[in-house]
Length: 114
Image 1: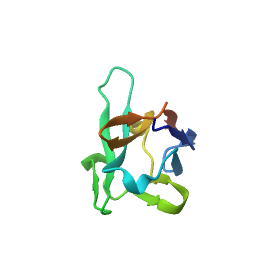
Image 2 (image 1 turned 90 degrees about the horizontal axis):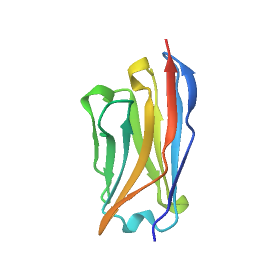
Image 3 (image 1 turned 120 degrees about the vertical axis):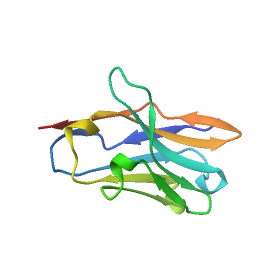
Image 4 (image 1 turned 30 degrees about the vertical axis):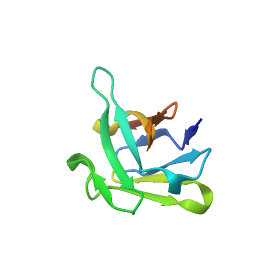
């Protein structure tokens, strides 16, 4: 059973930065892909950033140039560095790993005040 544990969320002012971490119970190098999703109140969950096993990354247009996804295979951890945060980035952020099926973390709240 894959377990994903997110951390690093919190309250930050607009223009600030946060780094989210997602620690996996297994070897992340075995996952087909990993990613960060977010869900704001009343909205559908959306992909924020993804990274493939081969290291290819992709981003939602709304975060390009501001967010960076990376991973440390030795630590079985994926990161999301978020900079120049905006109030519209406020959401619960979820870590995702795909290996046979989708696996999800419990989510971490990010709140950006204006």
